Length: 307
Image (tube, rainbow, N blue to C red):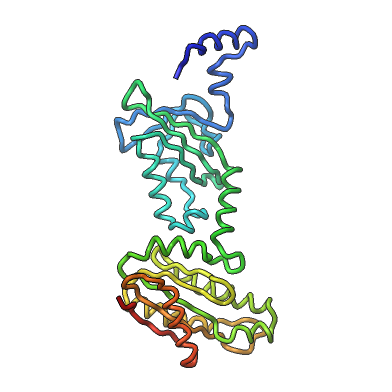
């Protein structure tokens, strides 16, 4: 909004310093492109360049760019999507950018022509024309790459690259009310003996191999986490039969893991609890797993939480 100083200051800058307030100050940033769009055609948002160069944000220079072209370059392989769900993260960002009811400040990663960038969108409506919105898009790659790495380190186990307990707590609150919600608690059998006989380096290879097996079963509704040591846990939303098939496949898959220098078969004990009220379901699945240990290990028990 212009104030009473604007014209006075503009004149002073030009007379004293030969600086044009628009070209040399307001529109002079080389890390930003400013656009306007007429939202009359909501299905085809076309961003018209006011200042800057599309090369700045990773695209070939042109006088305009479709908003969808930017979203077509969305990089799904980012830590936020890995934690929150790739599709969910994309749609959350997409909906926010396309909601013109209020000003927005949103950042997300793209990858175009092999170059990855983080872009920050500042979007606000024109006060003089209802259908016009202003976009400023800034390259914030350095800052947000560092923030993304930090986010990943706090939510992903450094040894196995599975999600960790912080991510588990986040996802539990997200999924526990869904129909078909299960918790799967797992522990390698006699893992202390593996470490004692073969050393922690070999033990870590075993943990990574189990984690790789678990990751091979993941999808949008099935996630696995390392809690620490040789304890793993899964949050699963699926039918009872599908969960039992998955449990069987994991038990069998672990037995087929082969690690150099180990002359024994790895086995795993598991407790699977289906939610009824989702009251401390992890603890109940843990109890089931220890019942398996007492029964002889290398199998799973399945139960439904009582109300």
